Image 1 (tube, each protein chain N blue to C red):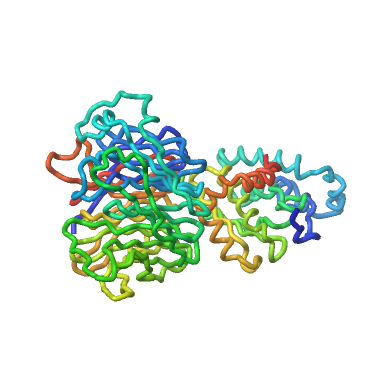
Image 2: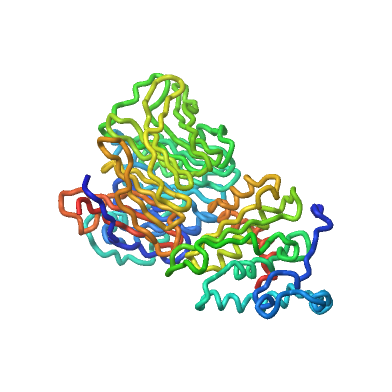
Length: 196
Length: 392
């Protein structure tokens, strides 16, 4: 077994994660949120997040144009390859680091939409950064319509070998070949299990 | 200069709508080979229908393929009838395929349009005759020297391998054994080697008279942001004779466009939206001087995956991740490259992986005229042919 590189990452409670529904009903403040960790303690990232995600998928093909929250909801439930938590909980994926061009309001027809996701690996030397990036790219390419282009990068300065990782993640041939690698594919499937 | 426009001419319909990587026209027969998944589908350029398919040779996707040019006209005619296609796969091998049935060879390949209802036997028409092993990782590209003698393959393992096809004695009729030998392994690139291309030769081209090197020049484009030029020296060693930089921001696709008579070679390299054209000054010194002669205007908004230069018209076409196909022409007076035509969403919302110029064999061409079309290959698995209209 490989060593866990970051044994004590900061973990967000699921209730702390950005979500459209919660935002819509009421801003998260006040004493009730203190109980969230009790209320949602039963592996909430498995049941709770997956159901909300299905709704979002419906929205995606309906009237509402896809926005950053939709993207967040698609990728935040991906499991980290070395911690029993999701990328959302570990803040590897953050809502403010997701950008869509053009923004939803300015889109017309089926023109191209570019989704940019900047990832923040839990520590500086995370060797699994590429795998995480690959999982995010795969998840989005599978879930989004074909006119979406996905760019996944390491957030500036968050990773020691940014350039190399970014280059690999942006390389269509490498990504395609990686998905035909059984070991890697098995790993990705496991990470994406929590998304379905 | 007259305007140019692109019009949809025909669609080659795949068996499966999965990503297709590349479509390679045969050097002179009306055949087009498209790689997708672990298969190559061969289409007829006469009626745009499926001709045959190559299946079962590779365990992972086939990324690229190349037709072996027939041995030079001086060698025996009998060899010419043997169609040979080489496939480069993510399984890190290259496969050699030969098209066997002499009876079947006659019918669908002739330029006269006729229906081919041989059906069902397609799969056996192609024989997977040999596997070229040696690369450690997936093959990205391969190219034949104009004579068909040398094959270059390149891989993520940073190396380029040169293979020589040993044809044996000319009259050894039933020489069924495929004989390929590794003549060089070139390790000078620091990153994945994304593409290799031999410069094509035209009959009008002057022989490269250098005593040091042979006439075949090979170009390779790599992840390390350089393009390297290679030649075989008099001792049969393959040597890097030039390094071209200047492609910041990395990108791969460079393709040896071709040779214009008397003007040297033109290679075109691409970088996420920026381009450089590089003709050769053909020095005979040890190191050749290559000079960037032109840059294509930036049109694409995402990576450019493919460039094609036409030896016939001098036009350059590009295709990329933004789904756009662009055609450029060099202004004869200023030497600047200008955008002459563009088609957005040429494959709907899908990315375009490959563009290539291809001679037309269909009925729409006036008799006695030689016309070219542009063929684009997309992530939708569809291959499209575009008519190029000038002066409209």
